[in-house]
Amino acid sequence: MDDLDRLFRRLVANIRAEYPAYLTSAFPVAEVYQSVVPYRTNRAELGIEMHEDYELALTRLLAGERGLICGDPAMQHALSGAGDAAKITYRNYAASLIEISTDAVARLDESMRRSGRPITPTVSPVAPARAAAPTTIVASGPCAFCGGALPDGRRITFCPYCGQNVTVKLCPACSAELDVDWSFCPVCGREVEQETADLVESDTES
Image (tube, rainbow, N blue to C red; front, top):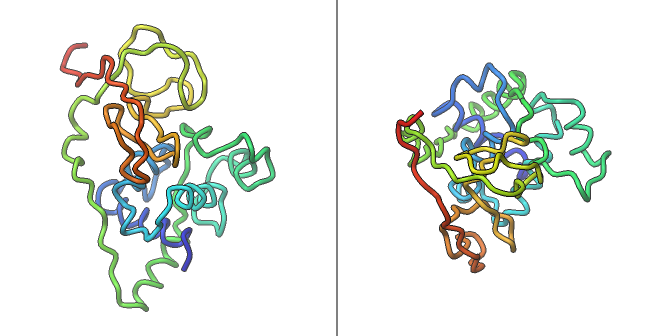
């Protein structure tokens, strides 16, 4: 079993626990690394020590390796290495839709039955808050992930072009996702510049 197998096994376990609709319907790529199996809350269960290795496994998954998921053929072609690998990452396809392969899930279930080891899902400690209004920022300048121009002055949570959650930032050393008010990366320990400007919890205003 390699990193790709472990990522898929954790993905299926967490979907069954918190996002059961994703077993039978398409969902955005961004959901995988932002909500279902984010590295920072699944690192121990995945057994993947480096964020770069997580990103590589996720890229292989989204490229369609081993037929574990179905997705946009153009995305899978690009991420498989046939495209310009120096410029293309899975974040370019944050809004693309993918589906879990039912055959792959059946094979996983059979494998787990034979091993006699059930998979304990990594239930997100913030899952109950998903129904609450999301954190927002006042948009300005380009999206840090795709470079698209954000709607200046509007409170937003996601980039309208790539679907990336713009209320998080990336560690400059290891690319782990960080909350905007964090001073240090919890994965590699790198000190990062705080970006606390205008981060608020949305209320019920329309």
